[in-house]
Amino acid sequence: MLSNVAAGILLGIGGIMKRTVLTVSILAAPTGCATPPEKIAGIPNSRPCTQADRERLAVTSNQQSKASTGDALGVFLIGVPVASMSGGDHEAEIAILKGRCGAPKT
Image (cartoon, rainbow, N blue to C red; front, side, top):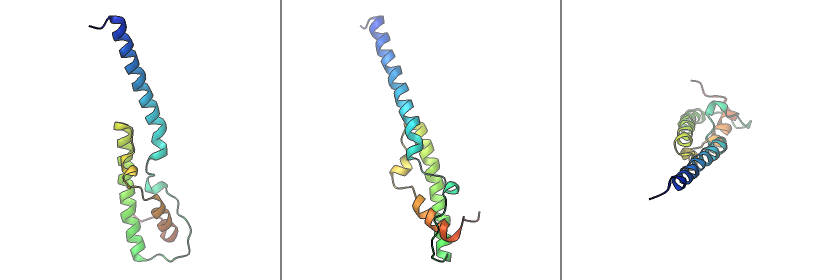
């Protein structure tokens, strides 16, 4: 049976661990999360915009939006941007397509 002092120490360590994990999660959250598609700037390029480019931009923007939401939820619940880690981030492709076609019409 643990004494009151030993139990207090263990509970104190648990509280410190929880605060440390929370602090690390908060600090790591902005670095690994997928950027919402509306915040991605286009990269100018000289290729013309095709219908396939516009369709691809709409699809990848939708996927990016879901990845951004999934990352925010994952960081909130477990401290890890799950969607970005599993290949759900399409920021580079969206930037290139926006440079060709502009922002997608909603």
